[in-house]
Amino acid sequence: MCTRVCSMCKTKKKLSEDNFHLVKGKFISACKVCRNKNKPLHAKQRRERLAALGIKEHIEQYKKHKESILAYHKQPEVVERRNNLRKAKYAENPAHYNVPKREYKQKNKERINELQREKDRRRIERLDDSYVALLIYNRLNIPIAEARKNKVLMETYRTLIKLKRLINYNNKR
Image (cartoon, rainbow, N blue to C red; front, side, top):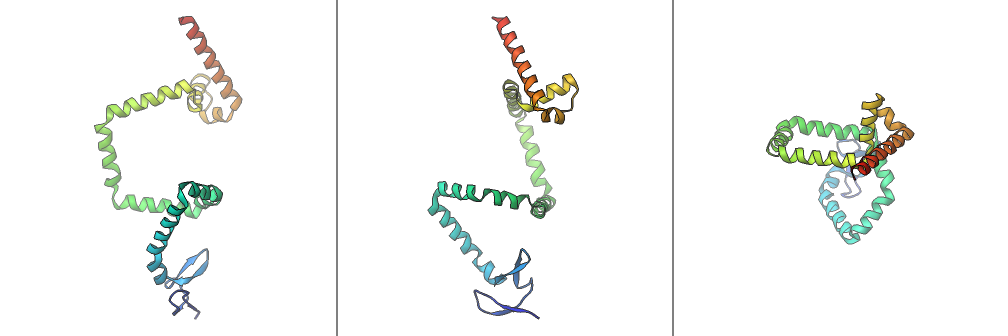
């Protein structure tokens, strides 16, 4: 039977997941009781440190470690854990997620439709990739995913649309 002395309370405890947190396959030095007791303190210290650093320095710190942070959040086990937590929350109270959304949509139907029309109008004006790919699919019957991959086709079709618009504009004058 292995034991370990907690680095904080200095008591000897059995080395198991019941007594010590397991991080990356290794037990940490402080026992669970001490760690959990100090969680609010560490959170407070972190908030104070961020406040002292200021937002600019905080952003710099994030940029410095951005790749490792994003890599961590893309790990399959982390993604799975996050998805399981979301599913569990939804399973506990599905009405919380569905009813308010449905009620909001019913109350604000006109506003939502107007916003969608505005969004579509801007997408068409800017000739977004999604709009151009949809036109290619409708006119040339090339699947949207393939059209988006083919950059030359997308740019050619985008230029063609711009020329047509220019001709129509000049003819209206």
